[in-house]
Length: 172
Image (tube, rainbow, N blue to C red):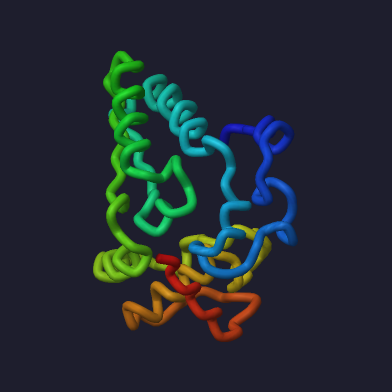
C-alpha cells in the first residue's frame, strides 16, 4: 500500500471528503461529476509504473470500463493509450498497461466474471465506503443494474435495497 494522502489535501472532489458528499443516482447524472478525482488514474498509473519497473513486472492492469467513460476523462481509451505510450517510453522495461475491460459494460464484466467462477461477493464497487455497499451511489446503482441485466444473482449486501432510480433521459 502506498500512501497518497496529498491527494486528499490538495485535490477537489467529493470522493475525498465524506460519504455524505458522494451523490446518489446514475453515472449519467451531472452530479456524478462531483466524484471525479483530478487525474487520479494518471497519478496512480505513474506510481504503479515506477513500482512495477522496480520489482521486475512487465505490465500494469487497470479495470476502467465502458461505463466510466462518460464521467471520468482518465478512463477513456484515448487517455489510456497515451498513458500506455508514456509509461512504455518512460521505463527501461517498457512497462505496458493492460486494460481488458475498457470496452466492456459493467454487465458484460459481471457476466464474464460469473463464467470464470469469480466470487463476486469479494469485489467492491461502493464510493461511500463503510462495512457494506450503500446501494445508492453511482457505482452501486451500476453494479445492481449489471446483475439485473445479466440475470446473475447479486451476492452483494447493500445498506439500501430500494428500487433503482429511473435512468435519466438522454438529451439530444
